[in-house]
Length: 463
Image 1 (spheres, rainbow, N blue to C red):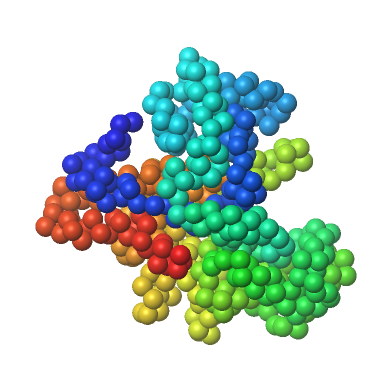
Image 2: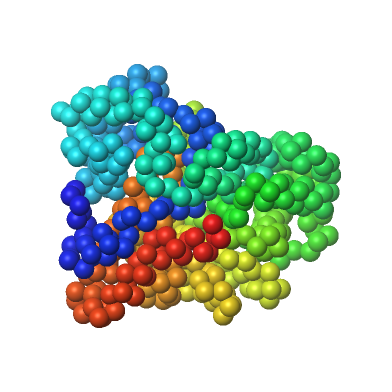
């Protein structure tokens, strides 16, 4: 893993080192806790920063036969790290193998292969560095040249940590992103009503009607905007676009607010209404909206009871995408209420579907308005990123692509941007050396790499 890792041609090397490598990072979607940035957390050891919430690594360890005691259980941090180190050698050809060694290389400067023989040496060296100011949370963000971080935040969140970060004058811009999924999660009356009660408290409004719900959400969206929010995010199985009337939605909301359970048709209608209103609210604010589509979650019921969500038991789903996606965007387009939009698929079978359908709603005014998002979750590895960029190149304009994000819960995940940039430069560099792109246009090609790596996102989100 030397300076030309993944860069197979001289042109790829030139593009990466001269045009991509030094650019700042705009991490416009992640799940890192803003509290840790506000408090400038120092991690006690490498296990704490690397394994504490990383369900990618947990999943690999379980697959390798590691007992849950050493993953989320009561084993010591040192024991947990040793089990991870034993697992790493089995992750060859899994993206974790590349990510692990990139994350040791940057920011720790370690070039050794992690395994049982080197584990303790690496653990002690990284743990020692983590006790220094350069390796606090803010120190790592600064080292990795991160210009913008967008966290993922619920409408009821106080945003107090974002406010503290801003007051402290931290150089990296840390903005909230609006994630209102719980306001449309009506599968359980008890869970939904508990959330609406929290939304009442956060908004200062009583919520007894559907219009009250929209008013409360708008008030919270105003608050998010005041705290620097410029984009929303939605994690959904698919798009929802069932036909409904306003009277039906009012009745459905009264039913669930009255603690009754909804039937399947009522759930679909309510979700469809909420998706529409969320999109209109984003349009009115001038925000960009993101849709992460296709995860089937919490598949292991026993482990969900023990550990809860986001612990490594989600998978790629096979939901219908095209018809509801078309109906959803078509309504917004006809009403001229469609804002900048990024769509991400989790099932690779949907690559071409997503890019071709999204681009049906380009408006001829805003370049790159409709975006086919980068390889996400199970697809944010070399093969998945290549397929995503090839589909976008073949069927759209990769020149307008807003590039990579970490989608991570770890402060050591920023090298994923480096990984993406290397793969991007290798794809384009290979085309140049094969004569499929003109070597005489290297000035423009270099600028295209810079735009995809950084400038397109900066302009798209108005950072």
